[in-house]
Length: 279
Image 1 (cartoon, rainbow, N blue to C red):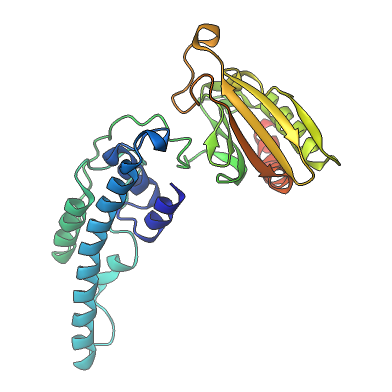
Image 2 (image 1 turned 45 degrees about the vertical axis):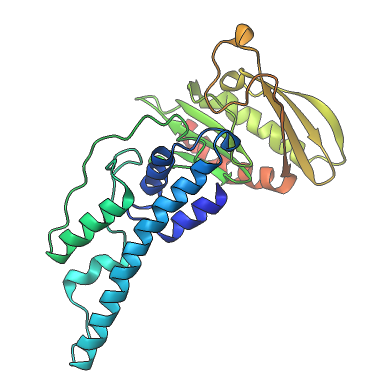
């Protein structure tokens, strides 16, 4: 997944967030990649065919500019300014056309050539419950840390901004169930994790409790000299109801290592933002 994200960073017809969302939905990338590893290749193929079309357009533009410069026209046309930014912009990650990217790129190139960049089809793509896990930021979201290592974030919802969605990512894996919750208890839990990261010496696995939006998981925390080891599994359905779709299947335990320094850094970045929101 990280390799695909790196490719998207270098070619983003809609901007990163919406292009990323489009590829995940279009290729049918599952929660657990091993369930359909070919989905990653389908996403890459779709991105590559659109990029090849764009590269052909770029080469044609470069050839035209060489001719124009030779004729004394050193400055590019104002109509060519779109080539140095996104081809278009989707106002929300889920709002984009459901056509293949190569069709969208061809459509945008055609309209830009006649100086009439079209508005995107605003239809919402197929529901995708893993927006949180896939590192797609939302406007009011605040937090700290790197999603591929350790990140804590909160998205206010409604008039009272102290309530919303709190999420923890450990090595890119979302732990919370994304239901509405109060921020304050999670701030306290995050502080405890930071204190554990700053403590000295190893510590054997012990139960880890992270408040209401993590109740679908059974978790332990182990400390080594350098790392924090988070181990978690989903509670049986009969015991806790339906977990979020990105949770590991019941009975399957994930153990993820995070450097202590990453947890501390996430806390120092997120804590003042959370405190300002609560004040």
